[in-house]
Length: 226
Image (cartoon, rainbow, N blue to C red):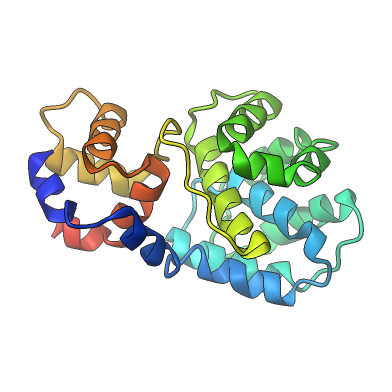
């Protein structure tokens, strides 16, 4: 871990917030927000997409760009329109082709629940740990699962665009470990039991919350691996 720490110890939390503005999953959200017909439905679109954003056939960057480009082509007037969009979009998606029937079934768990997120969005932004538990409960998953904590991260990105302010992610929400982060762990954390413990220790040593540390490592993956 020390070698990786030495590579990024000069980066402050303020630096990370600037890095996140260029996150390839953040930039498409700005485009979607600027083009969507009813901005009230921007939040449920983003959170729902985050919860089915796994087993992609591309990088996350490519998929979120595709999602944004499709997302503003539809009109949204009620919660059902959100589900109709994904029923229409997923079969057409170039990069989210795997496990489509499973992902559509996952969407059913959200019916009637999305309004609970956007109806209380400001409180959730001030207490994102509460959102993590809410999503875990309605999806019937561990609140530490990758899709759950990733959805919290994307909720935070949504909130920056919507509220025009940046709240810091809680330090006690774990990093969403995907293949990139697993590979970084294998290179730098071989003497630590698992990747979750590795990133928790790194986060504390840097004094950067895990969900913010995620952007630094994920965006600069090639540099750390090569």
